[in-house]
Length: 534
Image (tube, rainbow, N blue to C red; front, side):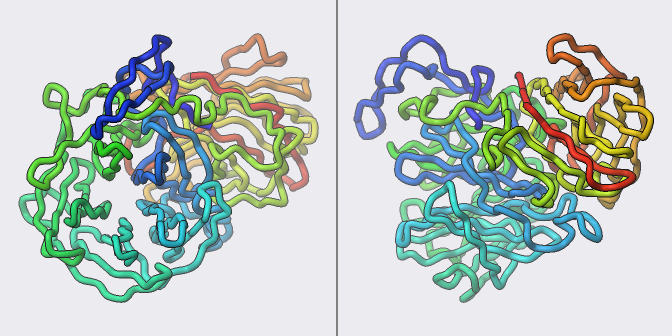
């Protein structure tokens, strides 16, 4: 599970003194947190955030597109240290394409969705419109850990933001270019009424979208992004249906934090229990993806502003006026030996898995689930976000049950991929480094890739390693591949893979463990351990 390291918003060894919050109460930051936090808050691909507070606990949801389970739910107690907790969408049961049956759903699925907590029935609500394929759904849970139960809803709302008003009525703001507000029925599954409330004006250089809906001091606010430039805010003093006045909020702000890239945008506001406001957005930083960044917010005459440092989004800010939550969240899952029957919530499958073909408990057993030569068509590829600025992932594999024609290994996975792994034949077991597997602009496979290097091996146990630099620097965006027979002495194989930096696939690079068959099903590998170092 995720705990932001010293690189990502760090805790120092020196104790900090208690401070006073806006209500004049003493707040002990305990001894673990430094006086500042750094951006990005989490150096991982977690786009389209919405952050909410329930009592003294904060929750974060993000887009996951075709990955399953979807819509990860993260938890924090101080807005700086986060852990992966669960997924609001346990399975993408919306169309066979999400099962890699009769096609694929690459770049479809869970785009900007919304998360809120309803006090009247003590229930978490996640709502989303499956982009391009699958319709609209509402998932609810009494506890953030789940279980989450889904129901199909009547209307698909593009880039929706949910507001639960003081009188318990539910509204959503949504749309692209044309922004509307709809009131929902009490169960959230149907629409009672809707009204167009805003058309993107000519002075905004591109369509507005990515709605987040708030009620603050009796006024209604819709935060909107103009991708990928900045954030605007619309305010109504006359109710949820407007009229709304639109102003810039955080437009084309230079970014001073690590991870480089573009301008922070597409996020939402959260208010601490002590009355302080923060804006959590993301910053485009490919090949890592879209990274969460946070800045304090001040108010003047009913309008919010982002606090800047020397005219730009700060590389660091004062630590929130909250008790340090470092030891309240689980430490990052840097080593996984798959001893539980369920997977740690940092893991997500590429499309829905065939659950009859894998098991966890005594290592992760991955049977071949697809007969294919195409990495992108292979079922049961297990992925995990690559944490920046640089991560080294090592898997220990038992390959003794592989069959003739099986291909298994560890990849850096996106719409242009590369991997190191085993290709089994009737006569040899070849260790291979391969690259160039690619999806075309229609998100269909354009290339199966080609082998760069190979060598025969004679062992039932292998360690495979990928060293991935996902920074946006000139020297960054690369992956190198290594192997070992004892897990201690590693040897390079192949060449340096240069990652793709274009944004069009939206997602950042992930580590991916795969196993597929080219001749006949029935083979298997056992992942004995997965270890990652930053």
